[in-house]
Length: 466
Image 1: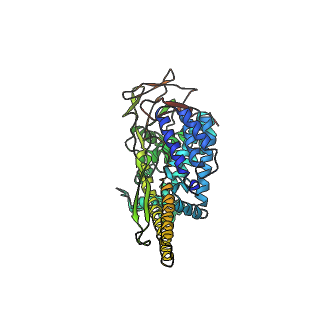
Image 2: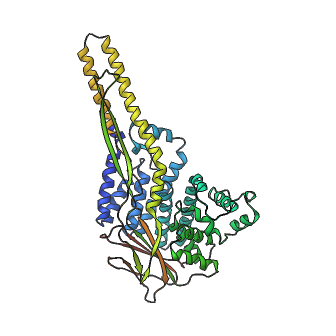
Image 3: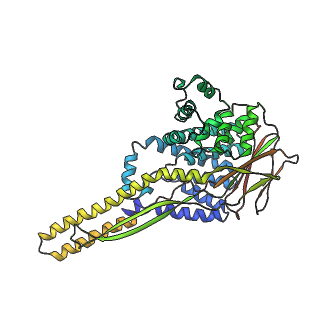
């Protein structure tokens, strides 16, 4: 019985092994293990598919990443569709066992990155059409997360926004911007025309949005000659301290097209991961008139930050600036999940206590009407032991989370070097040399999860036709 409910232990061991391999720079072995785990057909499959896809990118095999990320995306969609139905059975299994019985159900941060990584993988393999599709999906995932956070966004400090502009932001977030009657004609017109003022309007989405995904989407569309201002405006609003994001928006606003420009994105460090906080207390059974022993146990995850790989980066002498603080988004997402985690743990604990107490009450009543008190005492101890075994064996926290994401994303841009060589230098670290392909505008992606592990590099020609 217990083995079917405690599969999380093997998941935990896999996660621990994967963490060690990534920190040691052995991305290939970590990828192979995650890819094998992703072949299963259980609640963990979408999780391992996402991990395998991310590790394939880190291992420098973008073509291998695509099917894994596609499987993860489809699995996430399936969970979202069925949570109001089959989710009741999942919740029951989690109550009897632990949260590892629940399907892995990532939210905004994880989902945006799944499509963003798939877009980068398509771009690195030369499939610009596939890249554009996935960037559009990443944008949609972002707006789905905005919608989930609508109430908090509406309560956020709107700064210098007018009442009408605040209405526009709330309507845009809630995907109701097609109802201009709620807005003044001027604000509705600005929204529909992708107004340059959108950078200011999007400002109160800060803390909820992924500037990294928005900026790549805007750059890709800008280089292709498509409408890109709202994506660049959102990136500029979400990352006000990044000078390149601000300059790109200003250039697009002025009607300039990029030419022979290279954008460099460095994913540094590792995002926070979940660690377990657990304990077990014993108590004498009240229903059993203190003749039996019960247990109260808990195991919940907490989010633990990890060190950066470097404190700063430069590219050919140009300083990069932070574009996205993944730690902050991960903490916000965990905080939203925490009430559900805690509620299920309380229900789980009370279920065990109630099961133990009811059983002891029945045994005690039977002992009162029996001449063999010793046998009933033995039954009480055996029952207590069985409930304790159930309690302890299923006392596992759900440690599944997108712990392979970067801690911080750095970004900057520079004119394309005449020799086509881009040198990315971390503070106090070894320079990573990148040889650009093709001509024209390009994107350079560098992944550096630890200070000692090898960096992974991908290049994408943004001017390539579909």
